[in-house]
Amino acid sequence: MTSESVPAELLEVRKKIDHLDKKLINLLAERFALTHQVGVLKATKELDAVDAEREAQKLAELTDLCKQHDLNPQLVTELFTKIMEEVVRNHNQLRDASL
Image (cartoon, rainbow, N blue to C red; front, side):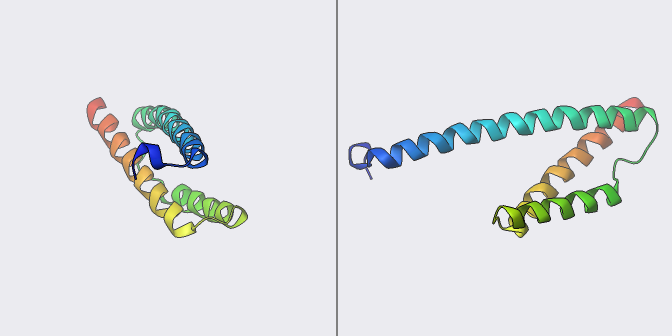
């Protein structure tokens, strides 16, 4: 599809999607900044990087939200599991750097 053949309505919707994608990235950056603070606290208090109970609780809450918004809970769980894995990796790096 060439840019000339793309309907104006489609271009407008794509523009909105692009805007939301930027918002999602900004929110993700904000989330990682906060989890960095958590990692620093965990490192100074010598706490484990992984909090399995918190992760399970969070995934359950997200699953409920998915149902409210007609979203695929499996997809959201996979996305947030990846995010949490990265958070734990970051927490471990903070802990290792403080040793």
